[in-house]
Image (cartoon, rainbow, N blue to C red; front, side):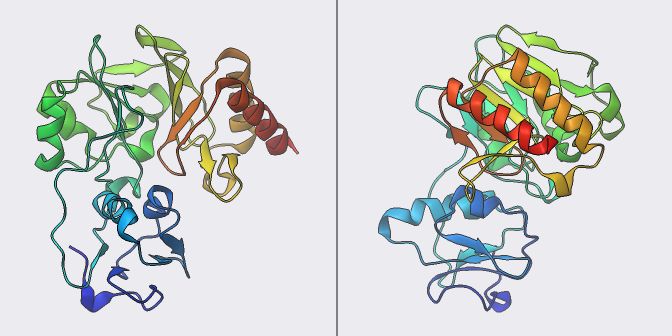
Length: 285
């Protein structure tokens, strides 16, 4: 629960606030960019939500890894907001409930006839486990890299799921049942593609040539209205990451990017391909 006594002084005047326990993961700014902004290494309320934006504020609050977003009057939270389908009929769900252990990274659930897939890990909570069970549970836990493992072990245990991680990042999940060493299809239409750079064992997952689960290797930027990569958060090699993303442009297409950190974006495959090619050129320069 957000702490009124620790309300950040930079919040816009009004009911909603962010407290000073915020770790500046940026999750709220990606979920509701019109309502939250960064101020001195912390997220704050940019402006108070109007009646039509209350749901966005609650989505940010339920995603916040430190539970730092709330209301002065301690309004009761609305009913279940997560899992939240990204696009109607897609079977792809934003899970919210980000974990501080992964610095607030987003996690995703894909509901598929071949078996449901959890991409990276939200924090473990029954508030999320129950609706996931109603959606058919989890058959596979697919980890994009070592940083976003969080509570993956607990999710795998709860649903008796297989867990996938790249061999070079396996130290973060030694209990994983399956190791990725090269590009491979985990199930029909779901391909794991190594993209070393952010970490040595970074992987992206492409689903049905439409959805790219990109971990921290690639994201959308609200500020630039374009694809971006994080040079200041590249733990292995920027040069290697550049070449990895270049190879991705040559081998795969996608229309939507769903990252761990950074904004998500749903577009068109040709547009996203052109943007990725242009990003690689900027990275090289």
